[in-house]
Length: 283
Image (cartoon, rainbow, N blue to C red; front, top):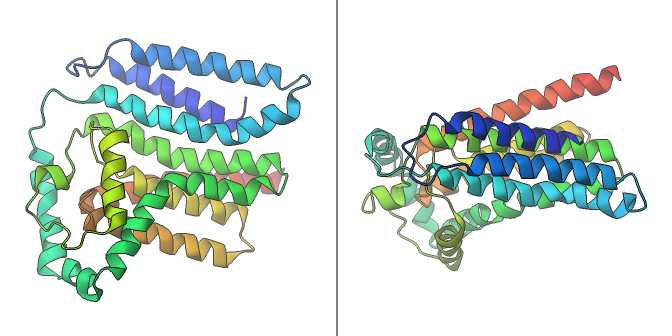
């Protein structure tokens, strides 16, 4: 199996392991076992079938398949929605948000140019959903299977690690928990679209750490590892990841604490990138 497929098997096995410690979650039953068995069976079947006449098309499928499986892994966290939210964590997190957005004037500064910066930030937030596909497109046309595997190994290590922490921090986003605390003063079409996407596709188990932030920076570390001779690409992606971080706070999708934790989790991906670089140099 590929590195990405082992990452997913490890993640689904981890969810099975921790599920016994969250018996108070009303939606959680035996589903994690089903996810794990289905993942192992599916990946082994793909691996076996690719050895035959379907080698090339199945190879392409396996390059892009992690995008779909990542959505499934994210949705599995909905099983850990608590019976109620006590807002203890959120009340401690919101204090820093008020200081930065109000006392330091960040919200006023963002809105000082009208719709321009809010629209840019909301677009950055929206485009995170296609970030893995965009990054992979830079790689697959090099026809280097190892590069595809390395990208997913780095990207998934940061993204799945963020998902894995959701059950421990059941929480509501600030736009729900504190509706009147520094809401955006500018509403753009991109924000309306973001809210619609979240209303229909997000989970409600928790917002800490921010998976948007961890995945954005994990993509930066992956591309840095794969394209060290193209610093302009890494620089653009780094600016984008920072913009996503700001967008999550300004749009009240996340607390600043979520953003800081998301960045910290992405450092796992950076560590994996350095480990892979050392492995490649030795082999």
